[in-house]
Each structure stands twice: as structure tokens, then as C-alpha cells.
Length: 293
Image (cartoon, rainbow, N blue to C red; front, side, top):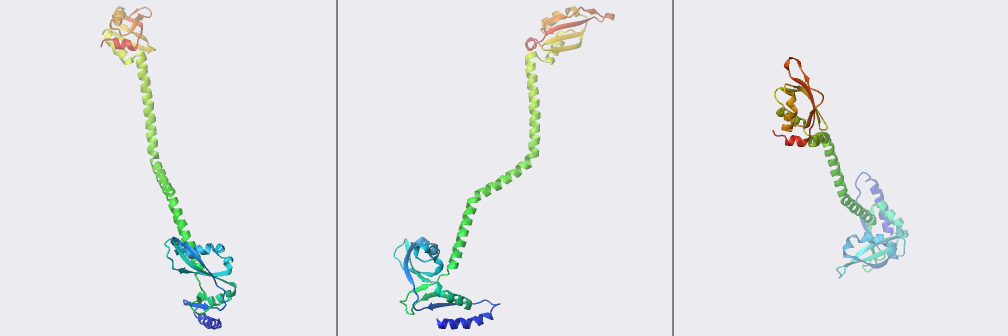
């Protein structure tokens, strides 16, 4: 260890002149006599062998009876004939006695890759894994995995939100057309309702145009009407005729109206223009149907 101290002291001023250049670390193997190193076998599934350091780090408090912050540890892969399990040799040593040396190594740019308590090959060796890097890489890997899972799970909702936004935009673009369509529909409904109402009234009391056509067919050419009133099937005719006395017979013969009768006396007009009359009758749809054309 004295030689290592001298090496640290030599490298420290050298690195002081390289502040603005990239440092090149020196990897060393440290031999510390009487260094207590405890070892035990750890078995993991083969599928988790690549993350052995991370798994052991997370479960260190269950594997060894020491606080994880008070130990240094390392893993050495062991040959195994089993296809489902991978075996590792876990080496553990207390960290407080080595803490000053680790700080000195770090300041001098030395990176210990392993600790041993003897120089021969049979001595217990503790390989130093970069636990911080493993934890950082594992955390980064987990973060990436969670991020990927989050994106995967939220993709349908994101897609639904995008589609909803697109549909909303399309509906907003179609809003003026929808207003026009609803206005036209309202007008069509109103016209259809009016047409249906007129059709029902025609079926109930008959068509005024049909009544007028029937009267034109039934009355003689010497008769003309001054007014025609049709209300609830009641017909009131006022006019002049040179054959007023024959009007009742003509209307009954052609069945233009039912039950025709004069209302009041016939009034003779001057200058031989005939007589003025007021005539009442009943008109129905059946009468218009039965009337010959």
C-alpha cells in the first residue's frame, strides 16, 4: 500500500497540469494483506444474467447481513452446466477501512478494478463493478422501459384524441351547411304540413277549384256570379241570370251542390238584364266526385 501512496502522490501533480485536457485513468489491482473478503454463491435465472449486478444490488440487504452502504462487493461469473440458472460468486468486504484509499485513488486518477488479500492466484479476489454505473444504467433502462410502456398504453388515447380533434374540426367546417340544411328541412316540413292540411280539408269539404269548375259546367252562359262563398261545406252564391228560375233545377241535375235553394226573392234588374239572386247550397267532397265532368 505504501507503493500505491507514492504512485498517488506522483500522479496528483501530473494531473494538476492537465486540467484543460482529457484525463486518462489508470486501472489498478490492489492487494491488501489481511483484507477480510467474504464470498458466497448466488444463483440467478439465465434470462436475468445480464442484469445480475442490478438484481444483486437491489437485494443486497437480503443476501448479506451488512448495510449496503458499508460494504464493497463484486460478482464473478462461474461456469454452470444448468441451462436455466446462472451462477455467480459474490465477494464482499467492509468499505470503511478502504474509503480513504478509494478517495486517494480517485484524486490521483487511479481506478481499482479488484481487491485481493494475497498476491497468489488462490487468494480471494473482489472484483469491483461500477455499481454506480450499473445503477444508473439500470435506472435509465427502467426509465426507458416505463416510457415505452407509457407511450404504448397511451397511444390509443392519443390517437383517439387526434381523431376527435379532426372530427371536431370537420364538424365546425360543416356547421354552416348544417344550418342551411336545417333551415331547408324546416321549410320543407312547413310546406309539407300545409300541403297535408289542405289535402285533409279538400277530403273533408271538397276543393273550391272543383266547386268552381262544377258551377261553370252546370250554370248557363246567361248566368254569371258576383260572389262565391264556401265555408264548412256551406255554399253561398250571388249573381245575375236571365234564367234565374231554372238555376235550382240545373244545379240539382248536375249535382254541383246539394240542396240548392234561394235565399230571399228574385229581384228583376232594369234594361232586361235578368234577375238578381242569392242562392244557398251544401257542397261536399262526395258531391264533387259524383258530379259529371
